[in-house]
Length: 405
Image (cartoon, rainbow, N blue to C red; front, side, top):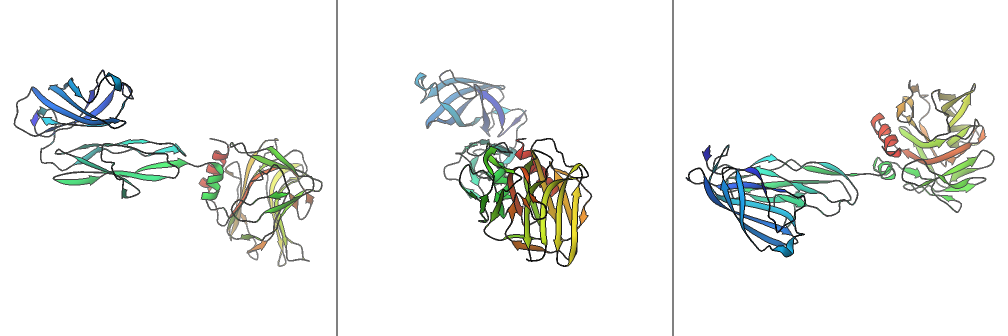
């Protein structure tokens, strides 16, 4: 048992108020003074939403707080919600801190992840000589008027760092930042991770497949079926290619310069080759890149073909591709040394050495047609190109996000 300024978590209720939640907690901060243990008077000052001021006389007996009277609240205010409260007074309680102590943070605001547009309620628990002052910050800047133990934000659409500075006459301390992360949708994640071209293939009419970020829009021709059920969990559509005469050709060059990453969602509808993306350059020579799913000796394989004027054809085939008529997430990571192929977030391995003569190209690309074998059969969605090598963790995260997990 000691004498001084103390801080405890206590429960305080009043019948004229229906708080949310049903019980709420306030911070007990008796001012220092040489008074004996036992009964002492306190004043609770707080704020209720929407803007009602509370001042309550309470009685402190050991660790019990009892409401004696309430000003500014009556039975008409049964739906108000407590926002903040401060207890000041004199007395002694167990386990306190010295009266002249600078503030310390006992429990800072917690980081969390939310959906875009949600609001959050952040709180802090601090100790030290009273009175304690609070100032909340957002990304390092003070938030005007946010001077309580809580912060109730408005809708948050981007990841934001919040912190609170607690001060008294003897010093100040700032909490560790609470990072409120906004969960990104699959398209937002693709763009945030730096895709330079992104064909969502979600058009339901017309003859144009838009490049969401790179401007390399493609012209649709042949038997492409628009509005097919899409791969990812956001409900967007995909495009199905009939394997006869259909393709999408971009009107602008697309850089495939090492390092880069190719990403797509693919659903096969037969044993005929499914072509994702290809390009032919260096006419009239047969210089190509083909990214496709084909049957090799009766087994479906994920293949990336390279050929150019100074190197013979290189065929990087991964035998573990799943041909079950379901959507699968396919990735090819191309660096100056290797080609790494992934299916559904899993590295198929081993890495395939890339020909030293190959450095990449910048030329229009074709979706749905193989520059070697012709037109492909299957459904394609969410084709993206990144000007870097995505990490294994990023690839796994893309797959999980696309699956809605």
